[in-house]
Length: 133
Image (cartoon, rainbow, N blue to C red; front, side):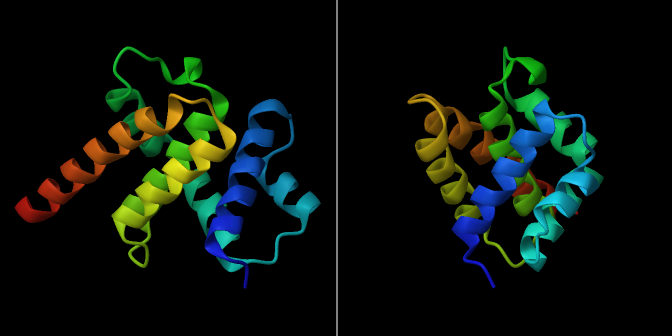
């Protein structure tokens, strides 16, 4: 089993490729021959929930259209939002911290703060919704 941080980097690279290539996610997965259950679950989960995840990003990225976000940032957000909303085995704080670390490594100097702010708002709203339900 691959370490989660390395797995997230692989997921990010795959989502980034998907933004710029014509192959489907399934073709990219087959081409890369992933054998890690976590990587496959997150990639397929993001694909299955992309509309919901992208809606969260669009709502929280005030003043930014989804398409105008840097591809790396958009995909880091997709990974973390999927983990926050759909992976009960990952504490939201960990998902947010890992997203910020990915941004520090792969994106711009401003990205970690931007990503942290969006994810923090989504997590707080998700917590509040959970308490009401």
